[in-house]
Image 1 (cartoon, rainbow, N blue to C red):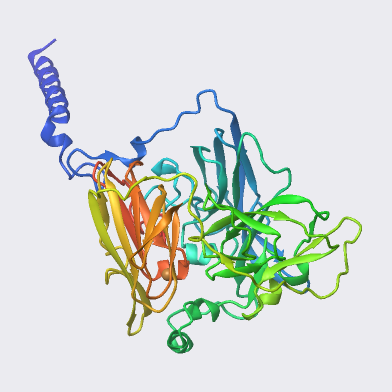
Image 2 (tube, rainbow, N blue to C red):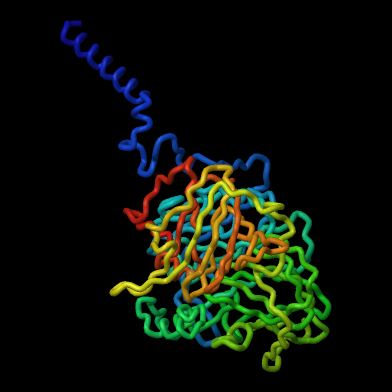
Length: 508
Ligand SMILES: [Cu+2]
């Protein structure tokens, strides 16, 4: 071997050693330049925290294909819907607590989509938020969600990519985590929604009518002017499937509000009792109320006993437009209709998300918070862009995040300073609602969504016990699209994803 070759080999070895030393050196590791965007000193990627193992659990596998379908929404009308597996709502998923759930999302639409598991406490990277916990799933591609179904209760799933548009077009379905020992043999899910069938879904930048509505003091004048059809499980009016039950029969009825308007469902007097709220069992002996108030994004489960009549009705309180679209007939086997025109019972008290304390609390006493955050909810108007919906005078992504570290107790005071309702939903955690308008609840309520009406103030507490980057946002997705979103940002982690970009990540 001549000297030249030996020299070249030596230089190559030295360069290799240099590269290895360079890669090992601490200043390189903590450098921001070469690590994924967003990484800071000592932070871990959200992809590497809160792992869940399948071990010897039962595995429940599903495939959900996002696809376009012509959907028969009422007897005379079809709409172009975006669906999971061809129906609205999408395939209803049922699993048992403790199962390991695997859902493969296949995207056959020509826009990117995701699936968010509303209310489920799962690892951050399975939360389905484009630009924060994953890249949006592109047309023709797929993504597999995996999580342990830990807490029995009623949940739902929906796309979180441009959710104001995609949920409106039908990309949602129910997820029920059943108890190992089921209490009710009959168990049914009803998803409520509103659609724009006979009119263009109006953009909120055209605000004349809405401002008029706002003046009138109706907390949802904006969403009411956008939609003209109410649905139950994707069907409106006479297209709604009746529920077949015999007099005296009991059932667990689970209601999910996938729309952006509050719905008041009237039951026959004495026929229902609220048993769960946002997947938490409620402590209640009250059988007096016969009206259920369900806010956007909320879930409420009731025990329903069919009264001693052939046909009864559960339906939207008749004081709003389109109420006649949302009536569920409860019929007997031998009397399947046609039935006389629906008539609803007289009202005797309203049961809502904050009416009953939860069986299991997060905090026995009001805790001493490590982090406090005041969340002021307001409306703004800008020339050319129309309305904005703000958190602390900012719109997403400029809203101030709630900065926490693992183990913190977090106190959030939500105040609605605007004129519209804001159902605020926290991902990845449950919180305890301790007071309303300065008055303590004797029995606090554990939830993942709190409906804050104009002028109201709620104080909530939660434990930062699920590391990640989690959304906290208004579940009137049209408000979220116009800014009302913030993030619970754990110090220990960072998101390697970005908003926008080639995957068009758009979480609100
Ligand atoms: Cu809102």
